[in-house]
Length: 338
Ligand code: KG4
Ligand code: ZN
Image 1 (cartoon, rainbow, N blue to C red):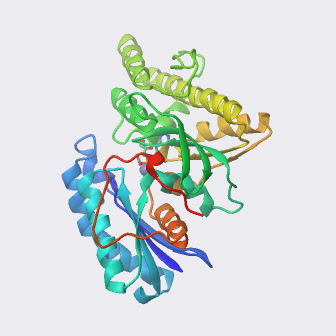
Image 2 (image 1 turned 45 degrees about the vertical axis):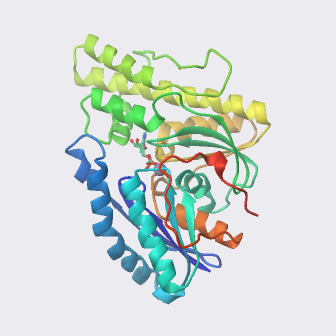
Image 3 (image 1 turned 90 degrees about the horizontal axis):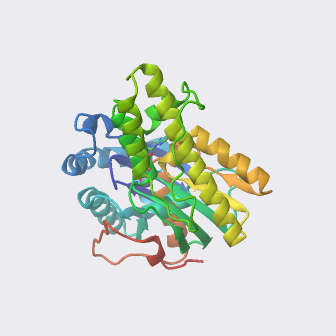
């Protein structure tokens, strides 16, 4: 079966075709970053309108590039949440309507399940069970994954998500939106020994995170500095080290508590090189394995939705004709699929 995957939960339009027999046939991505950069953040109404403009041409383009015909599509998967309601409605409406027109099943996919399963698109994919660290612009989750839909959230953020903390700190340092990758690049030039930022909530038991204090710490350090380029780079490095170290400590704790030996890292911040290196070291020391999706599948994309949808359709799941999206949706509400 070939599944068309559609992702429109935030500021990226993603489309992909996944075949159960041949794997990923093709994918297309359009980022709205330039559209929102002017405002310093995602403007929901502009995001929805741009998805309307881009989605259908991108579906046509993905089909043409994959060398298949529209009628070859055997199922349609769309992100139904969590995300911006208007943006989600665009993908859900197009996906549901297209499936009805083609006479094939449609399935609503949880965006974070898509992220969590993205490493399955790589060669030598991880095997269940595993621990997943999901770090994106909207989420910071540690999840014990027993199988598709068998998700136990072990830790969550009590305030900002990791990506949000990267973006806000980047703004403090005068970098343009979205600042995560720019801050990471700047940190490369920073001196790791000059400032030491706290490792929030690592001095007490538990697996929850808190990142908003780090942004404030960065702001105060920046104001007390000379405001020179060197200061900016050193603060970026201290911030990144603190985030990465905090995530490493919490992953190690979760591995010890669950006895799991495989760590999957996904979501936009999963593309961070220093995070990848430190978690690879951790898993080597633990005698386990770490899996990351390729950088393009760490951030939002259609391929992860096509894959998650394929697995759910294979298990017999499908939606009725109503179009429903869930801007807020816990991973733990999902049901298992074999
Ligand atoms: O998963 P994603 O594409 O969208 C959401 O579902 O939120 O994640 C986007 C987030 C942004 O906050 C962005 O700044 C961050 O991931 N990000 C990074 C890096 N690449 C993307 N943060 C740190 N280092 C990176 N290399
Ligand atoms: Zn995402």
